[in-house]
Length: 263
Image (cartoon, rainbow, N blue to C red; front, top):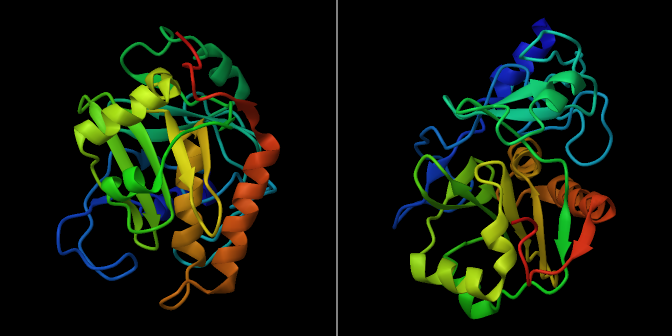
């Protein structure tokens, strides 16, 4: 799996750093530290869809500029994973692993992975009535127009990130602010820990909210990481972001934020 491992090695560089007071603006050079989810060898997210896939993030180049194209291999059994394969979160080292269809089915039960693996969901939900006003958004302290949040079971807290050319940057929310969001939007109480996220898009006039698999969020991070040019990003990255959300709308099922997705 030479090509797959080369791509995975490049995608591993899409790591997370925590925003601190006085940090440089997104895109500026600065120190980075390992984040809550890394990408294992051969994994597609974050940064690109599977080689041969269509839609946002497809065939994203690795850090050396080479386009993806090698067939991915299941990191559990070694079988071909296929272009549209699922991922498992390895809870021991917080890495996403490629999984073929047979292995994904094997772990498609909460207890199947034990304390080691968790299958990343494959459902996407557009929240038609999610409530997030401008004042609450300002309280979250996100300096850009996109963000995603998940429950980090290892830390026992909500982790909030925004995409940047340097990777996913963590901006921890105030507990009170997140508690108010959960009370207003009970759907947040049903997020699958570690592998499912709230994704917010406020670019332009958009005020859109989704529940998505966490690898979708890292695909979005990868679009900025690999397509960003200059200080403002350039038209290519804007087009890619537009395409990402257009495809996400097409693949999503509409639901209400007024109740958890599962109990």
